[in-house]
Length: 310
Image (cartoon, rainbow, N blue to C red; front, side, top):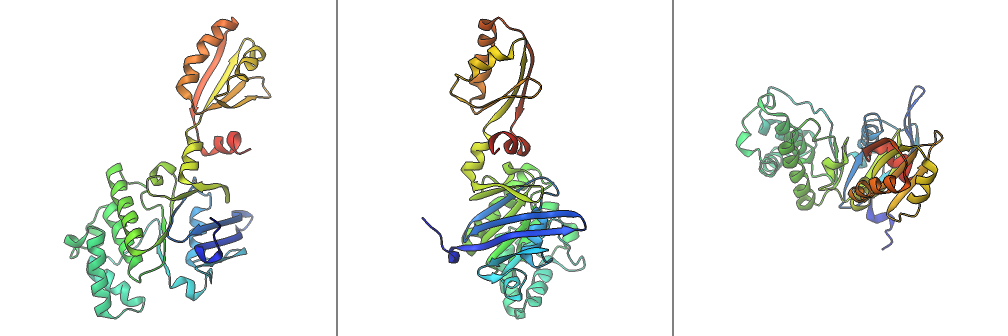
């Protein structure tokens, strides 16, 4: 199915963002389908937060253009339909949760009655209704994230931006937050962009994942496509006769990549990890060669870039 412009919640084109001589974003282009949960995954300083801040209208890109529901990025019209939850949300410590949400709703233009009604609904949806009279400072980190999500949804946005909402939480806390995000996306008709250092943290709810590296898009696709990349592992080999070994390995069809390095060692990339581990000793024995180095590494963002996308 071919999507038209109207089917995209976000369409960013060749965004650049520089701080002095450092490029935070470098020719960054991305589309996000309406109704999707789209995850941005990459290490610190890969451009995730910078991109979210540009979408939220908090900063202007050095160059490039973009639309949010066909409204210019950074425009007042775009800001009105965005809910943004930063990585470290700040609250008014003197207010209770209910008072804080009502206050933030009124700041967005809602009447007091509308804000109270909306706050009640959201506190129930983020499972904090029984804590409505508590103050944010008395809550756990996970609860504070839930409050921030509720605050971001007070104005009924079309696009919700979440900057690393599960960072630092334990597994139970992560699962709770992610389940709430998924349910809110469905029930509120939201498009969601969520960032994370780890793809495994968001794969359970994301429709698409974009891997970022050094301010640019490394690869973007359905979650199944990204999962397939990470299903590969990397093996580093060195023997007494790498030429003989290489000739045999090239006949093994289940190996994705076989690379002879400049230092004459061998790199093997495969999804069938246990099969290769089982086959290799027999190959070494039949060739009557010695195995000097055998190192096995899980797939990383760097190795995806180097071995699967080169």
